[in-house]
Image 1 (cartoon, helix red, strand yellow):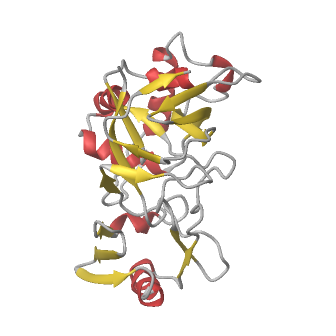
Image 2 (image 1 turned 90 degrees about the vertical axis):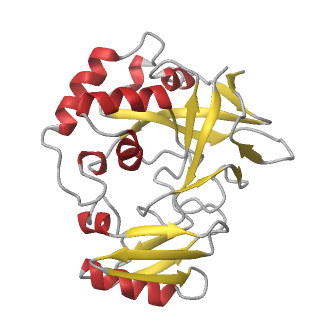
Length: 256
């Protein structure tokens, strides 16, 4: 039976993740504290991995209650209270990144990449193992590059593709007591092409990924959802009226 084997939230958008054994699910479908904070520049534009490669130089370690973060980079390290020291945190990051920054917050749903499907992104461990082999990376580096919330064990590679229906159809799946929709296969950006620690580019990454993904696309994948084969993992939205909105490691994942 496929089960949730890893839960990761990213309290600050584009920064390191924090592993948890359980996570509350907000009414929006987002995981509590996932992308709750984000850095923006003087014009209100996200300062993220897509447009600011230097952000890979910053490491972030969070307290278990996600109220504190320790940032390190360029030989410096400092701890901040996310709620009380937003200005100091933004200034510290700005010095590393060479630009004016401020920290914004949305506690009700965070700042997801896909506002129409703000639920957790999902992939299987077997899929990540395949990607690891394609590029001779270690598994944790693959995790850091693709930044999924849920990792599912006890499945074949690319099993998650089957959670997404063909166009104009609907597919639901259950995780624990909650029901979700698989809304699409995640279209990837430039971030996975870079080393997660120093932003160095893996030459030909996207082209090789596309070639391999097309060659290995499983029969159960919704082929009409692949306008490009530079896609991996599943975007989700909540479709549930469960009272206990909590997901935890060990919860089963099954199509309903």
